[in-house]
Amino acid sequence: MSDAFSISVVLVNWNSREDTLRCLRSLGSQTDTDFDTVLVDNGSVDGSLEAIRAEFPLVQVLETGLNLGFAEGCNRGIDATSGAWVATLNNDTVADVHWVAELRRAARAGDERLGMLQSRVAFMGEDARLNSTGVLLYRDGGACDRDAYASPREGDVEEDVFCPTAGAALYRRAMLEDVRLASGVFDRTFFMYFEDVDLGWRCTLAGWQARYVPSARVRHAFQASSKRQPGRFVGTHLRRNRLRMVLKNGSFGFIVKTLPKTLYDACELVVWGGPKALAELANAAVDGARQRREVALRTHATGETRSAVEERWAVTSPEPLRRELAIQLRKLVGR
Image (cartoon, rainbow, N blue to C red; front, side, top):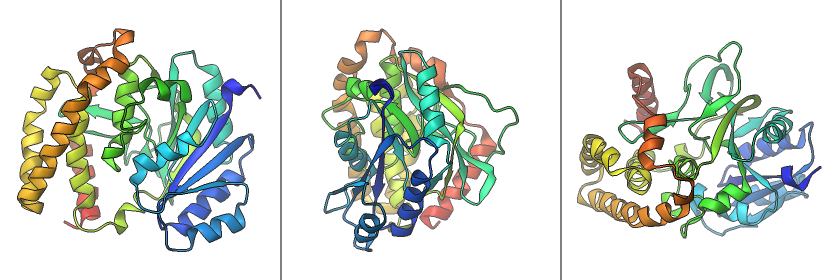
């Protein structure tokens, strides 16, 4: 195999022994076995490490000792691998036996600016309902999984997308290094949620392309780890990280247009957590604004302006999908 298409797979685990073992078994059943796997454990105390090492002695395990979040966990895994391409895979997924083979095939078929590949992700136990075929960027500064809760399309074909979801993606390492910030390839300050959209947005600004590969299939249990987090964990991180992401990557005009959504989010956070939550949102805003210049310096060479990217990729959220996502989010955060 050419080194130009070597693949490393990165998983992050936090107290999810059975999910992670199931995921690793699916990787062990791949028809294309020419890849290495690194598992980053974020301080698990459920016996994960012992079980993983006993069943998968060839998997490299990195212990962080505490929960660093998905973003920094991925960063640690990426830095520990050497593949020319890096796959990130949620530990609550099961990969089809041809997953690695199909991603490698698509990588080989792409041109030199192809940097991101998106799998076809269906819900675990509901293969007739999709979880994601990529990421949609909305004009209010939000984002969500493309085709979420939809039925698989007949004659599904490979096509360009804004960016992939990191739950089942393949990234070109040269691209990741091209857009790496002081806060990491994935911005560690996000902890989790929108860290993959933020990365994809930066990659797109730098002139890299993303492709959906429907033949690379994965099933996802969906937020298995997040459901074990307390209170408004998901909703709070989504709102803070959306603002941080927009201020880092959006044009000034785009930021202004997203202000109604930002104000609405701020009101919700105050209702949920009082003045402290508003202070945390303000800190996220300061952090995002601070990183704008660094993003510009890392992406300026291609001539792809922020507004050009928004014109090409930002869409209006379909109301039926917005309602469905709101229902699912309310279930998740206990509203």
